[in-house]
Amino acid sequence: MKHTPGPWRVCKRASCWAIQPITGAAPGNHNDVVYVATPYPGDPTAGSVTSQGRTKEECEANARLIAAAPELLEACEAVLAHLPDADKEGSWDCQSAQILRAAIAKARS
Image (cartoon, rainbow, N blue to C red; front, top):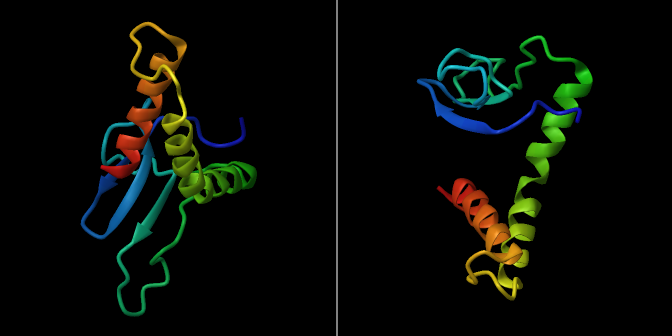
């Protein structure tokens, strides 16, 4: 795995939205995977991606994962809609449906 391991969380700061790893990082410690700064006139960092000491390869893998998020969400929703036993307690489909529903809820909240 080249990207920063998940799970990740979204943190609102005064001037940006940050995505941070949940494991091993306290909220607000600026161990960002990526952040989008609120644009200020003449601010060259607005919309920039932080490296936080990560390698070029890890930063690229993080960017690709984030860029794929809309398609991954769409795929989760499509798979969930076609699980025949999604509500049958104890079935593989039910366990998978729970994972898919949680991921979809996280993306949509």
